[in-house]
Image 1 (spheres, helix red, strand yellow):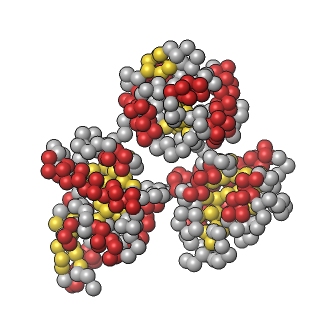
Image 2: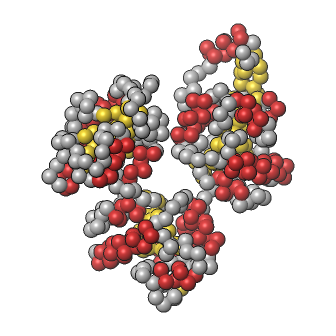
Length: 469
C-alpha cells in the first residue's frame, strides 16, 4: 500500500496510518471552492516522486494549465516536448515564473505507461489512481480529443481558454501569458472591412458598434456553405427591412483571394480582407471554429449570444427569434442534435397534427422543466429537445437510442420521451415505456429520478445490453 500523504498549507509530507486517520477525521469536507480544485484534491504528483500541494499552485495571480494527454497518442507525443521546452524556459526567465503550473491529466491505459510518459514531463500530474477525478475533469471541460490544454485562473478556477495548445505553441516566449483571449473589439481594433461589390474599405468597429454582429465563417469550396449563404442573405433582407441593427462579417476560409472575391460577390455584407490572415486566424481560434459554415452571433457589447447561428437561422425562416438567444428547450435539428454529445439530453418526440401543434405540446410539458433544470447546479450539462413525430432526424435519434429498429418506418402512435446520456453512461432511458406521463410533473419527476439514479439500468447505445450501474 502506498504511504499516506498529508498536506498542510504549501507542504505535503508522508505520514503514518494513525496520523493520516486523525487528519482525515478532523479535516473539513472539500465542498467549497471551485469544482476543479475539489477534483484535483489536496496533493498532486511532482517530478521525481515529489508531492505538490494544490494550495501552492492556486491563489491570486496563479494560472493552471490542465494537460489532457496520453503516451499512446502520436500528436500528444509531438506536442509534449514543445510544451516542456516552453514551460522550462518560462520557469527560468519569465517575470511571472512562479505563477504558472501545468498539471498532466492522463488518458493512458495503464499505470506503467503513465509513469513512463510522466517521466518525460517537468510539471505536476493528477495521480493515476484518481480515475474518477480524471473522468470528471474531462466532462467538466468537454474534452473530446487529445492533446488538449485547458488554461484556468488559479484563483477562481474559471476557464481562460480551452485552446491552450494553439495559444501556447504560437507564443513560445510566453509574451501573451496567461493567454486570455482578446475580445472581438480588441481583435478588430484598427481592422478594415471590404464591401462585396465595390471593394471599398470601411473601419470595422465603426461598422459594427451598437449592432448585433454575425461572424460568418465560410468558404466557396464548401458545399454546405454555398447552400446556407442564400438563406443568410434572405435572413438579412428580412432583418434590415424590419429595421434591426445587425451586420454580418464574412470571415473567409477560401484558399485564394480570387475564390474569396467571387464567393463574396453573392453576399450583401462586408468581409475581412483576405490579406488579414493573422486576424482571420485569431477569430477562428477565439470562437473555436471547428467546421464551416459557422455563424457566431454577438450582442451589441460583442458578447457571444450563440455559436450555433447557422442552425438558428436555418430553423427560423422569418427571423422571429432574432437574435437567437439559446433557449432551455430547443427544437431538434442539425445544429442542436450535437447537444447529445455534451451531456444528458431529454428528447420529446410529439405526436401532433403538425409541427406548430407539436411545439405547443412540447412547451407545455417541457419548457418549465428545462428552465428549472438548467438553472440548477450542473444544469448547463443538460439539453432538452423536441421534435414532431414525422421528423426524419427524430427517427434517427430514436434509432440511435435503441427505441426503434427502422428509422425509415413510421413511428407508433403516441408521444415518445427518452433521456440519452452519451458521454457519461453511453445509454438511454425510455421514459414512455416506464410509464412516465408527458406532462410537466411527469417529466420533472423523471429528471429528478435520473439524477438520483432511480431510473435503473439504461439501454446501451448501439447495442441490446442494459447499462450496468
